Amino acid sequence: MLRINEIKLPLDYEDEQNDLKKEVARLLKIKSGDIKTLEIYKKSVDSRKKNDIKFIFSVDITVDGDEEALLMRSSAPRVQKVEKYVYTLPENKRTSQLRPVVVGFGPAGMFASLMLARAGLKPLIVERGQKVDERTKSVYAFWNDRVLNTDSNIQFGEGGAGTFSDGKLTTGIKDSRVREVFCEFCRNGAPEEIMISALPHIGTDKLKGVVKSLREKVISLGGEFRFETKLTDIIIYNGSVQGVTLTEKNGKTYDYETDTVILAIGHSARDTVEMLYNKGVPMLQKPFSVGARIEHKREMINESQYGKFANHPRLGAASYKLACHPQGGRGAYTFCMCPGGTVVCASSEKNTVVTNGMSEYARDKENSNCAVLVGISPEDFNSEHPLAGMYMQREIEEKAFLMGGGDYSAPSQLVKDFLNNVASTGCKNVKPSFPTGVKYTNLRALLPEKVTNTMCDALVKMDKMLSGFACDDALLTGPETRSSAPVRIVRDEFMQTKIRGLYPCGEGAGYAGGIVSAGVDGIKVAEAVLGDER
Image (cartoon, rainbow, N blue to C red; front, side, top):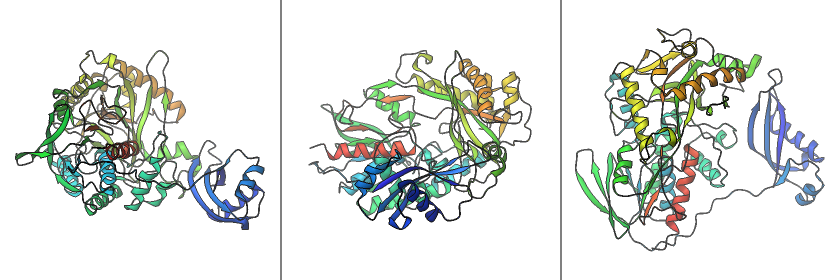
């Protein structure tokens, strides 16, 4: 099979398959009829020239004739030989008869559980939150009545934090397992276009169905779930896991025997992290980022990105990704851009305010938003304690709760006022989408001075990259503190801590940064469990 990259088609192409075959035939100097099959591998939008927007394709083809000879005589560097991707589960070398326990059913826990179940290990999955349908009711109840369920919310519950997001599947990691994550999502109801899109997303509305389907698949393979059940202790003897202590929502506590625990706890399970620290599990401080969500009118972003083609039916809501490094300062970047989405209250601890972004598959809401983040390094923690970054996050979130009025409203400010260091008294054309309401104030009083100074410089620079980014009516709502974990749970080349049988996994353990990389890490840890001859 041959892969041909960088094939361009105009925005108004007539027939995708036929037009691509013509371009491939022209490039390879063969007849269109010689192409037996053509599958799109990747599709993206090139909007650098606003008056000539194009689609860019990579395609996989098979041809009549000798592909090697065709490859040899092709002078185009964009042509390469590839093999069809197939994921093969490693051999199960495990001899233990005890069920492995997976703690958490976010992306890392999902894929770890699925791979263990495929191998016949019948994992027990422990999830502190509710099933996704009940969890959704709890989230919306919190937004409506401001009574927070601290165990089932945007951060905790079936599907993990990514379930209430854009369902964004972009990743920077280079790992063949990425393809298996995408394939598995599609097998469980995700839109097929995620397989080819350069900026794939599922949307929070569709992702919930995918999560339920994955749960049912694990159950069909022998897995067992215990929802609304929290890991409260790990039983250790002679440096090895002997079992776990679990606590149900009614307070009932019991021990469960196991020699293998996969910790897919997510980046917000602070009580679990503290328990692990007190058990002597090695941890390190880890850099993270803080900032605020910025909202613009969706139509304004579309026009800035696509010009006169802003409403073209083939383009949809526009996305962007910006980064800069102000002179003498620290780096700033946009994160988790949600076209046609909303800014949501993502608190998981009482009397704290946390922001995040969320989009449905259609991405058709009035505003678009993203986080504007600035890096925080361990030097900024003012403590050598491994959990100092976590406590710094909490301090900002508690301060935000008070600045918002103590009722889960979020502190908010016009970009113009933020740049001028004056408190806002209201909004303009961009209406805040935050579901628990906002209180207009000065965000410079919320975030560290090093962060706000960098954000000011970055907003000005980003406005030159994307016209209107720092416009007067753009709205900032904060704080954004949960972009990544502030701690890394140390593991060795066998994916275990110094406590044998304990496998830190995914974003909460400090080894992933998004849905896809967390899923990949879940697969890798499951492979390590299968290779452990116990």
